[in-house]
Amino acid sequence: MSCRQMLLLETLGVKMSVLEPVPSHLQLPIAVTCHWIRCSEPRVKLNQLKALLLMIVSGELQRITDDPDPTVLPAEDDNIAYKEFLKWKEKKLENNDFDLDAAHSFCQWQCCLQMGLYLNQLLGTPLSEPDLSRLYTGTLVHRLYQELKSAPSVENLFISSPKMAQLYLVLLNTVESVVSPDFFQTKMKTRSGSCKKRKASNKKKPTRCARPETQHFCNVNRFASLEVDD
Image (cartoon, rainbow, N blue to C red):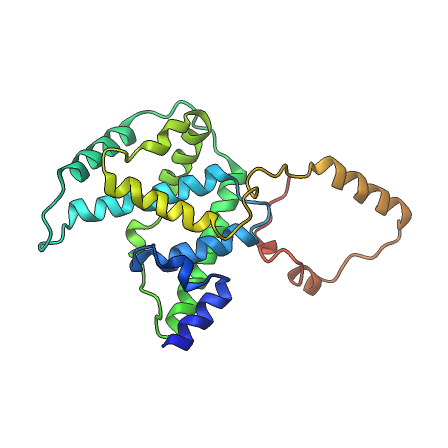
């Protein structure tokens, strides 16, 4: 089993020592998130990562309030935090525009999770399987992302529950630890520069043949099949 776990984590590019602070039932989705952060094209934005982790924390908060552990006394601050979260969800979102780039990025994450789950099952589940029904909600993650852009204070949505606030920080620190400190601060290259290079290249080679379809899938971008037209 240890060899199977090592194979799974090496495939995702994560060491078990990095995942140790994470609750066991969330280690697989967080390992997948680490893989997504490093390999996604275009690069994942910090607010997209935060929205995804806040959504995962909301699922955990729902789990411990709806299905509390009978051996553990329920914490009042968890109930308060969950009520505040439900009030926040009932509020109308001012900016309800659909962000195609964010949808593309979250779609990539779901594909990574799906393949991670398949590999984990194939290897005899060396990592615990997450509760998928509480792990991802598309409308919620998009709303969190939109609000983080206009109101960064939503990052403190679960501040009433020290346990949930700490969980969020643990998840965020774990994922950020696998990339360079300036990963989210690095300015992304503008498309204009790449477009100019492409145009110049096309002028030099006007009779260039279309590349074979098989070459498309061998591209460095492993998410090429998810690309959307501009």
